[in-house]
Structure formats: C-alpha cells, structure tokens
Amino acid sequence: MVRPAKLAVTGAHYGLKDWLAQRVTAVLMATYLIVLASVLFVAAPQDYAAWKALFGQHWLRIATLVFFICLFWHAWVGMRNILMDYVHAVALRLTAQIAVITALLFYLVWAVDILWS
Image 1 (cartoon, rainbow, N blue to C red):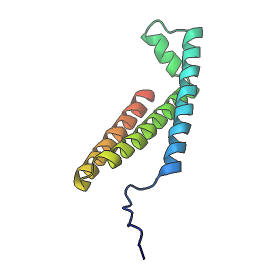
Image 2 (cartoon, rainbow, N blue to C red):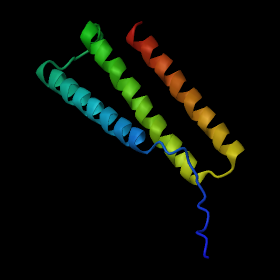
Image 3 (cartoon, helix red, strand yellow):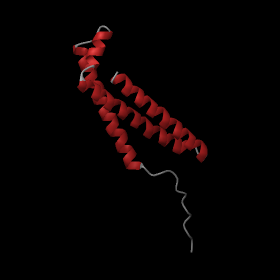
C-alpha cells in the first residue's frame, strides 16, 4: 500500500480573515480619502490656522483616527504575511514581527497625539 506523503503545514492559516481585513480596511481608507479630497476641494485651507480649524472638527478627527487604525491594521496584516512567507528562521521572524508591531503602535500613538493636541 502506498502511503500519501506527509504535508508540511506552515503558516498560521489566517486566510479568509486576512483577506477580509485587507479588503475592509482598503475600502474604509479609500472612502476616507474620497471624503477628505471632497472637503479639500470645497474649502481648501490656505494656512496653518485653516488646517487646524478643519481638523478641529470632531467628526474629521475621528474619521482620521479610523483611517490611521485601518492603515496600521492593513500594514500589519501585509507585513505579517510577508514575514511568515519569506523569513523562515523563527527567531528572526519573531524579532521582525515585534519590531513591526512596536513601530505601528508608536505611529498610532503619535497620530492620536497629533490629532488631539
């Protein structure tokens, strides 16, 4: 009797969740950019005070924060998949993933600080 070869299982099998996360975050980011472009087309700020007044509106700050959360989540899913596919040394992959997470969290905190200062 011929036994089937054992398949090596690699990766974390995020599959559908990754695909859906990438699509949802991309749609939300595209929607934000269209709305922002429309707002800027209607009333383009000419100086710092006008930009500050524009982003002083609560709805735009929340939309911008949602945009950045989507951006960082989108980047994390992509980077995690790239690292899982191409970095085979576990210690190196884990180090790179921790570095990416740390950088993205730093940028998120920075974005929040800018939006609410």
